[in-house]
Image 1: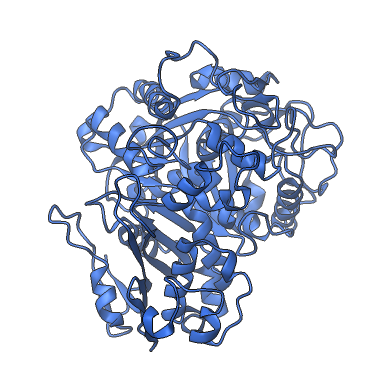
Image 2: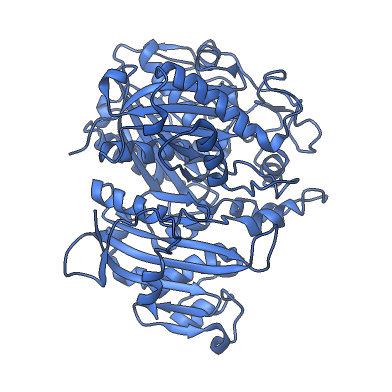
Length: 223
Length: 375
């Protein structure tokens, strides 16, 4: 069960990079990780008036997809059928903690409540690129890495969709509840295997006892 | 070639208490499990009722954060019994939930709202041989969990999987929906002109899927699909585009046409926006083959909205329409102001044909799911 890797994008604590040409560090951009309201304009010459209001998880995913040049890569018809399937270890932990801190206030932080679900951040990607295939948010814990890749391969193999935006996203600005700070969103755009096309081939990532990170291959393609 | 996927066992816990029978009997007899809040009474939110698991069902000393695990285990026990105690070494779990165990975020513990944390706990406790999977696709989790598990069986990756869809309401969830102004102060009334929002509920549904027809209860998962509104992250597309796409894709995946569907189990939250767009979208989905949809029903005015569990619990109710050859009435619906192409019985409707039932679900992030169950 294989798939062709068409493009990749990465956003991490260092900066943003993608297989379609963008490479920049947050330091060079003089921006806070993962971007501000001006980031889309500065990096991609795009107006995104709602970027500022979305959470870190969604921002990093959207930027990683931009770095993969998703809009240009797939036609509108292809995006209509494309799925997004992304995994996360921490899920929406940062938003959960933020919302939970308001539970005893007179007014809770209602505006962020929907972002306590990782699927909402995937939805931010889907609505920007009009991805109308299945939206699947997978949960993983240490050692499970690659669940989203396996599910993406299954969907492509079954013909349930033509393209999948897959990857991993974990964001936590500061250590909390025993979990270290982390910032990474890595996405790959896959299509049904077509040898010779794209940047390479994704093979079935076996569950590994050695904690080999299956997303590093995409990161390596970006930088 | 896609292998057929059969349902081998079912279990449920809901506001009607323990068991699929209690759930189905309660819904089909027109009762409601929405009652004045008890376990959650201390939380200050603008609603009087919820569909809590009845008091006395579980030890009251069980921490609220651990209720999802206990609730899931009871539902699984029932499903395993109907499935004649399948070999657990060859089985894995697909957990579908929104937030699972909130310990560590609200109160002490290690849950951290991680579905995989709960999936691992359940898998270890049940001594299942296949590694667990977990997904969190908002209120479409249950349906998409069934789809995810069915896909693995269909491809031949495994022969048997357990889907468990579970969520138990807590302060975090109640105040979240309350803060958004999404709660009906009283019992919700999906599709009624006076509807004011959603009522929440606890629930778990366990479904054993198998590649072996001999293990079947006489129902198979014939088709499944997902989609996204790609419109707004918390509100629906007012044309119901996403839910229509999911429904038509699932029916096509089953090798059927819309005219083949005999009953329709709705998402039907009771919010003004959801019900309006759902009716428009599904009305359009059938427009080429009929003036109206097949008889359609929503049950959140009876069970409450059980969030990640809803797709599982309501799939069991969709299956029940095939077994009972009947669609129950829509409780709370008196004066519909939604697209009239959605056929919403206000009294129980006998089915002259009961071969295929469609279940649809929607969630935050524009997530949509649909599944076809066939007798």
